[in-house]
Length: 110
View 1 (cartoon, rainbow, N blue to C red):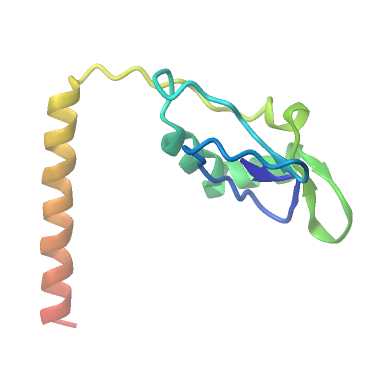
View 2 (cartoon, one colour; view 1 turned 60 degrees about the vertical axis):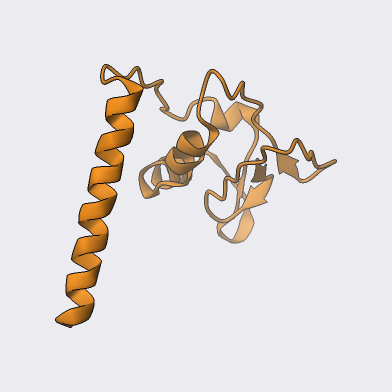
């Protein structure tokens, strides 16, 4: 979901199915088909925020209107992973460990 009028991309994920009556645009996904957190991260990225400022409907005072007509043109592609899920999970855990090791070293040597 995203506010219907905003000054930048502000997409959020609602897994509980709370729908707003107005002033919010929702994108309904089949969670089994697409990861809503992946989509929200892409839509909130600086790249797609910049894209939307160039292609979206501009309103007054730096605000934009978020609606299906304008969001449909956002260049979001489906990702088909070649790496098995178990291996991807292990790699993510490995990288997270490396990150926290780095954070620990930064705290010891500021």
